[in-house]
Image 1 (tube, rainbow, N blue to C red):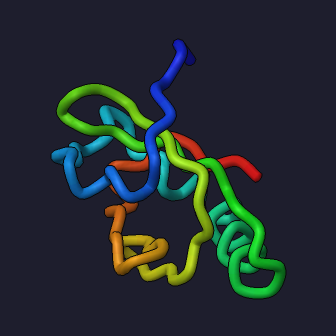
Image 2 (cartoon, helix red, strand yellow):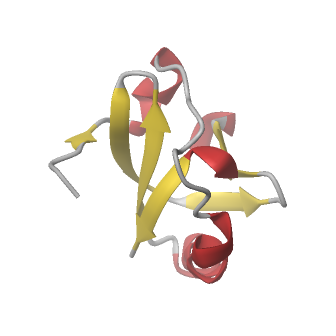
Length: 89
């Protein structure tokens, strides 16, 4: 993957999220559960790469909540799972 701009999590609402060109949700499901556990039990951060209309962006943040369709991070920011490209921790 080419260099992806790291942005502050507070800047996510400034971007228009877009659907990833390929659906990565099924392959990322286990990593998402791991990131959720890290966030809730250990207050550890994950690096989340997601698609915007301006190209891919990434943030380092704690995952607070995970649903079938989205993940929620601090300050109520929600990222639809369809926009996810990768997650690492």
